[in-house]
Amino acid sequence: MYNKTDSILKTKSYSFAIRVVKLAQYLQKEKSEYVLSKQVLRSGTAIGALIREAEFGQSKDDFIHKLSISLKEANESDYWISLLFDTKYIDDSMYFRLL
Image 1 (spheres, rainbow, N blue to C red):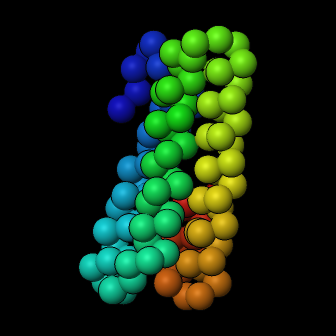
Image 2 (cartoon, helix red, strand yellow):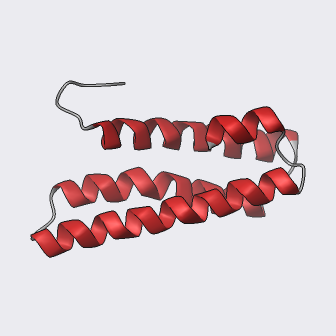
């Protein structure tokens, strides 16, 4: 859901979190995979949560710190998604939609 007052970063990170939640549900239900699904769920949903936290940072340094952690979570999510792809838990179509 896009709101005119939302930044593109907030909107895209929220949409990504929804896709990650659906991915975790798919992995658990269809593939009986619980460890990697929880890892990607944690890192993938943390991105948007940290962006939201940064919005109300107590200082410029706090704002930058929260966004930096969000970037680290995005990098970690990329790792888990690549691992899921390379181990055949997700197909080409899912992989490229997530990336």
